[in-house]
Image (cartoon, rainbow over all chains, first blue to last red; front, side, top):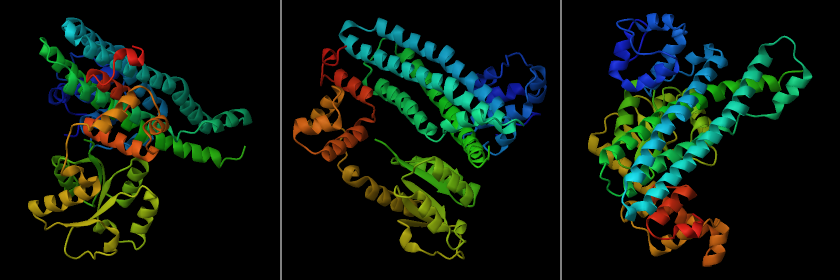
Length: 244
Length: 200
C-alpha cells in the first residue's frame, strides 16, 4: 500500500504497527482520532511531503525514495536520522539489554558460561553501535551540513574550502555492513545456542525486538547509503571542480 | 549458510516482483536489490556487490550497454543471467551470460536452471553439506577465537595463509557467523576454549 496524505493516520498504523516507531521519530503521539495524515502533520508542523516519503520507505522496502528525497534539504534528512539514533540508543538497546540481563539472572548455574557470553557479545555490539553513531554525529553529519552550507553560501572562503577537502564520504557505506552483520550474528547465536529457558516467552520477545531493530536499522542505513551518500558525492564533485 | 546475493533488472516492475519471490523462495539465494532501467542498475551496482545479476535482454538494446556494465562490475564479476521477456528481442553476446531464462520457462525449468547455477557457484558444498565442523576447522576456529591472525595461524599449524582463509570461509558458511567476537562466543559455548583463555 502506498500511503498518501488523505489516508487516516490511524489506518496507517493499523496496517503496520512498526510504523509507530517512525511517527514517534516525528514527535507524533497516539490519539489522532480520525484525522488524515495531512491533518496530523499540520498539527505537529511537519512537512507532510517529507513525512510521506519517509513513512512509505519504511512501510514498503520496494519504495525507493531517493529521487523524491532530492528536493529536501539535507538538514531535514539528517535531523530525522539523528532521531533514529536516539531511538536506538535511548530506547531500543536499553530495553533489549535489560531483557537479556533478566534472562541471564534467571538462568540455572550450569548455564552461566553460555549466558554470560551472550551478554558480553551484546555488550560489545552495544559499544560498537555507540561508537559508530557517535562518529556519524560528530564527524560525518557536521561535515555534510557544512558542505551543504558552503555550496549555498555566497562568500566562499579558502579556509572553509580547505577544511572540506580533507574529508571524503566514499568509505562510509562499508562501515554500516559491520554493524548489521553483528546484529544478525547475535540473533543466530541466540537461536542456535541459547539453552532452553523457563521463561521462553522472554526469549521470543528478545528475538522479536532484535528483528524489529534490524529492520529499522536496515531502512536507516538504506537512507544513508542510497540518499545521503549519493547526494554528498555530487556535492563533493561540485566542490572539487570549483575554483577558489 | 550464507546466501547468494541477487540483483534483478528487467524493464517490468511485475517481472521484477515475480523474480524476487522466486529467488527468495529458493534456499540459496536472496534478492538484495532491483532495477527497472540500465541507469538504475548502474546505481545499484555501484552501491552493492552481488553474486548474481539477472538482466532482461530488453534492457540491452544499445550496442555497447552490456560491455559498459561488465566494465563497471570490474574484477568482482558476478554470474550474469539473461532473461528473454518476449520472442522478438534478439539475444546477443550469449557467451557473456552464465545462464538464460525465458518468459516461457515453466516453474520446473526455472528452478532446475537456477539450482544448477547455484551448484556451480557454491561448489561441492551443496551435496555434502555437513554442518558439523571438521577437526581441522575446529583447530583453526580455536586459534581465531584466541585472537591469532591468519598469518599467526598459518605459522603455528604449518599451513599456508590461503588454506587458513579457505577454512575460515567454510567455518563462516557452516555456522552463519563471521566476526572474531562471535566466533569466540561460539568456541566458548561449545567448549573449544575456556573463558579464562581469552581473559574473561
